[in-house]
Image (cartoon, rainbow, N blue to C red; front, side):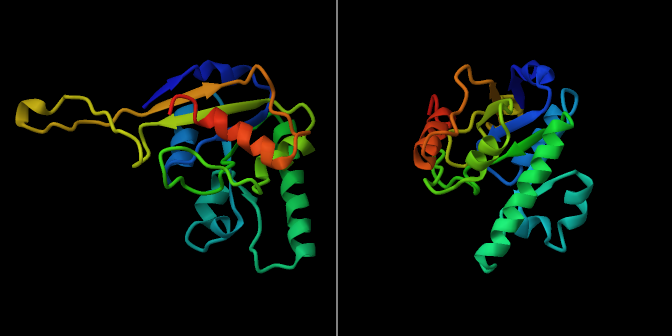
Length: 197
């Protein structure tokens, strides 16, 4: 795994990483690879955070529960959203970085698709004035991309060695604009994720 421009995160006083979502390994990989630079706290779906099999390690890792079950009433879901945004505000204002996956699910095609109504990134940026944002693209880990391998084991006849994965970090020169309509905001974020695909 190689990371381009990891040092860009060192100067962030606290902020938000918006990351493409290509596998279930994304959050632990990002936390491990960036650990020497900055501590990253992943945002995870409410149902996953409170799963009996996952709650303890996710709590220890400092993960932040987001969203809410669709079976809840609108009032309860709104209250949970406000709690989640309040937690994100406290975490970021304390100088930490939160890892958020705007697509909300693993991609099932080559390009990242963010549904027009998904509002996690939009609401977070709108609620936190002037929050620093980094966009991260993961290349080479998705089953829908061409995989490149080294040739280390070819001398014993194995043609596929270790897979090459690139984590590309961008601090947008033009900030993401949460005053745009939600669908336009998501389309712009989607475009940034799909650069080069």
